[in-house]
Length: 263
Image (tube, rainbow, N blue to C red):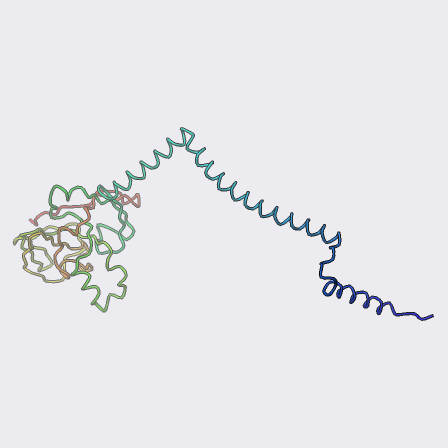
């Protein structure tokens, strides 16, 4: 009796089955039940996942809107939100038009200010009167200052060329200023400046302050980039007047000024 290898029989059956799919009577043979079952299972599973994802997104969107509505539906929450908004706007208005904080980054105003001192700068005075000699003011840098800093090879850090400065007004429009013999002279009279670190070691002037201008110097006279180097300060550049130091706590106090004539 002839016997055939099972591998041959299996291969023969597989080839005839495949040929039947491709070259039969032109109609696709019926799919096995197992295929239909798996197809239905995975199709329903995939479609269910898509629907679930869409449903979750809708629920998330809906839940966020619902949460916002529910939050503002509460009278206490509406009151707190209104209070916060009003407080925030008021603080912005105060900073923009009344007073703002500033800090000291250098020793040009030593000993009046130390590095790291924080102070309050009021902005109201400039709206109804001119500043006086001895007032300490914060101002935007002038063009003369910016040109000097940009051209000075010894000033390597040019990044702060547009930052606000703080100096003391020592003369106003019409004053004749002169610096000599370690003293400041205004209109021919020597000034008693008790708050400066030391007398100026340079000679400057005499020169008259033009209209609409101030002359400003740092209290650390020999270590300050101020009007005796870059020129006079236009009134419109002034941001405000320093009125008090509030930080650190042991430095709390009013800003010293104005100075008096020497006796």
